[in-house]
Each structure stands twice: as C-alpha cells, then as structure tokens.
Image 1 (cartoon, rainbow, N blue to C red):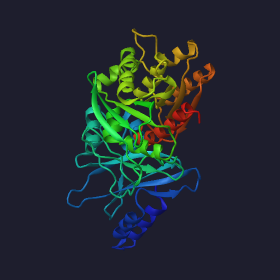
Image 2: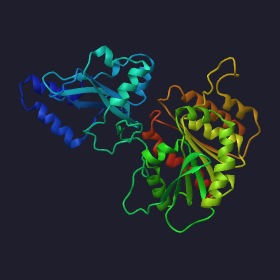
Image 3: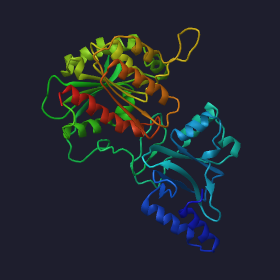
Length: 407
C-alpha cells in the first residue's frame, strides 16, 4: 500500500534527493512511529505505516512486523507473508502499511531476518518461538513499552486515536504507593498488595490469576494505587497468585475444582487472618485472562460462597477440546445454562480480533443474561493482548468493586 507519506519518500528518491532518507527519519523521530494517516475511503479506519531502519553494519534480508493477534492469526493459518515489510528502494527504510480500525490498541514488535526468507517465514512452533525470542520493540515509538517475561524483549504499543483511554495504567507522580509482600501460602507463591494509608478493615479483595505477570512484569500495583487515589474503588487488597509453571497452569486453570477450593478455603481465610480482607463474597473479585478468565467464571460458579464477582478477560470458554472423555466444548457455558441462578456479578470483555474466543464469549453472555445475572459485557478492538487487558482490568475492578461498595 503506497500511502501519501511513502509515496512522497519514493518520489523524492526518484528525483535524486540525497537528503530524502535522512529527512524521512527526522520526521519519524519528531512525530513518533508508527505513522498514522487518515483513510480517505473510511473515516472509521486509519492507514498505519510501521517502519524499520536498516542497520548498515548488519543489513536485513527481511523484516517482519509482528502486530499482536493479526500476525498470530496468519501464523496459525501457516502464512506470514502478509507481515513482510518491503524495502523502499534507494533508502534504509523498511515499511509496511495496514488499514486498521481507529479504535484499535495492539502491541507489536519487529523481527529482523538475516537468513533465507523461507527460514524467516516458517510457522512451526519451534521457529515461531525463535522469532518471538528475538523480536524487538520499535525504537521510534514514543509511548512506554509493554514489559515481557521469560527473558523476551518488551513490545511497543499502538493506540489509535479512538482506542479506549487507560488513565490508570501508568505510575503517576504524587500518588501514595501501597506495599507489596511476596510470600508463600501452602506451597504456592503469592504477592499481596495492600493500599497506602490508614489500615482499613475489612478490605475488599481481588484475587488475580497469573499473578507473576501482573506483579513482577506489568506492575499492577501502579494501577491499584491510582484507582485508590482517585477514589474509584474502596480500599482493596490484591492477592496475586503465581501459576507455578506452564504445566501446573494448564491443570489449575481449566475448571479445576481442587484449585478453586484452595483459593476459597486456604488463600482467602489466610488473607482474612493476615491482612484483614472481608469474608463477604460480595466483596471478593476473582480475576483472570484467557484460561484464567475461564477460571474466574468457574471459580464463582463453584464457590459463590466465597467469590461473588468474576472478572473475565478473553475467557477461554471454548474449553474443553471435545474427545471421547468429555461431553464437548463450552462446558462451563452449558453448566450456567442448566443451573439455578447464583449470587454472582460478572464483568466480561473480549477482543473483536479474537477469532478463537469471540463467539464463545458472546454465547456465555447470552446465557448469563437469559439466566438473569448482573453483567457488564464489553467488546474492544484488539486481541489477546496485555496491552488491552491492563486497561480493561482497571475498568472491571471499578465496575465490580464499586457495586460491592454500594456506589
């Protein structure tokens, strides 16, 4: 796609202007990347151009622009060619333009390929993990990066003009800082975040699954501090529950009765004794994303005596894969459909780009509404992406905790 910005660069190079490349990069440095232009055919879209500057000391054979969920979808389909950037002839500019919704938010990175193209475009799991391990953020994006785990590089974040605001996501100067205690409860790592100020018992409580990501990587404490400082939630203690490894995560976060009972019968009573959290289920929120989102809803379904609120983001409600050992997919949705209504409030959200989850989340929404559950449901323009979830998590906590506070 030859956008006005790229067309102007190509014309300048063709006219023999030796300063065309340096002037282009000076503009990128000033305005930041990616480059965003209106779409003359649709005011609800933007032309978004991602750019990479070639390194003369180690020139690239190819560059992939990895736009979260967009690229993942094509990788699942076995074709990464739509994400190959092109070299603008006569320059050190690699570029690719996508037409994207004006309210999109997505994380992205670049992978610089120095080998043959066939190797760069491999889509098997081993090759893809190698791409993700080597991918880097955009050095010309002025926004703060999104931190990563497992030794990987951070991602840059694209937030188009109409993307939902995330006013609580970043640390703000002058906001009182709560305290964090890293401990072990019955053999499992847990981080406890207590709000700043005078001790306020009983506290509301938010139990966050995948706690090692929200705590050590993404710094959810900043969000909670901001929410408390703005008076958007009542004093709330957050319990960040470590997954303790990939295999244990898959066992615990697929409607595990024993794990949910541990949360209800071990973790919450411990937090009540040690940190003064409320024992009222209306004051407890179980929070999760992906398989954690499935577990947040299941936890409230199984133990409404302890969890009166479920905050599910991009929940994996397709679970389980059908085989001879179960009665088919969307197990939890079917359980809600055939059970009496329970005293639970829900906040569900899912990305419009989540092709493997969107229909399943809509079906759960419809079942919950049919059964009369209090429900807030949101579809955001984005994918299976912490860049989106960190904002949605704050909104969900405000929704559920403020309701529990009678606001």
